[in-house]
Length: 206
Image 1 (tube, rainbow, N blue to C red):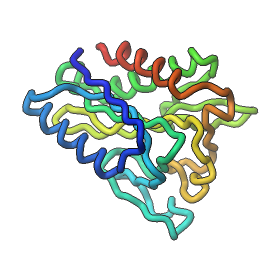
Image 2 (spheres, one colour):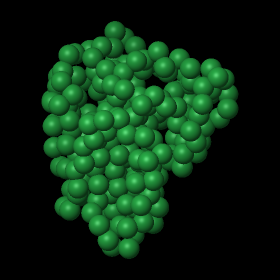
Image 3 (cartoon, rainbow, N blue to C red):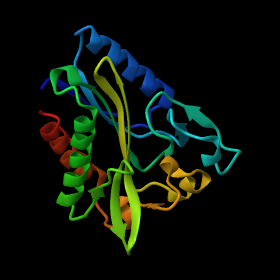
C-alpha cells in the first residue's frame, strides 16, 4: 500500500483540511499522488453533514459549518483525535460498507488493545461503549465517496470537553450519551495513535 501518514501537531483549520482532502481526491482520480491517513486536531467547531436537520441544533447561537460528508451534526475540538483519510476504493473492493467496517474494526481493535471494550452498531454508525450500564459514543464516522475515492474519516474522543455536545443532538441520536477515553482510562495520546495507525494499515489492506 502506498499510503502517506501525516500527523499535525498544532490544530488545523477545518476549511483548510477539507480543501486539502478535496485536492488529494482530485489528484488520486487522475492517478497522481498517494492515498492519505492524516491525524490532527481542530479548534472548536460544529460541523453538519448532508443529512442534518435544523431541529438538531439545540443552542441556536452556535455557528454551524456545513460540509459535504455524510452524517449529521457533530462537534470537533481540542482533545479529540481526528483521522482524515483519502482512500482509493478502485484499488480495493468498491464497497462502502466494507470500508466503514475496516474503520470500525480499526477503532475497536485499538480500544481492545487498551483494555477498553467497545462495539459497532448497524443502526447507529460509530463506536460505542457500555459505561456504567449506559451506551455512550466514543468515536464518530463520516465518509464521502467521489469516483470511488473515500474521504473525510472519523474522530475519537480522547480528552475533549463533553459539554459542547449538549448544544446539539450529536449525530442525530438523542437517547445515548457521549464519552471520551479519559473518563474510562488514562492513556497517552501518543500510545493511542501508534496502535491506531498499525490497525488502520492492517484493516485497509484488503
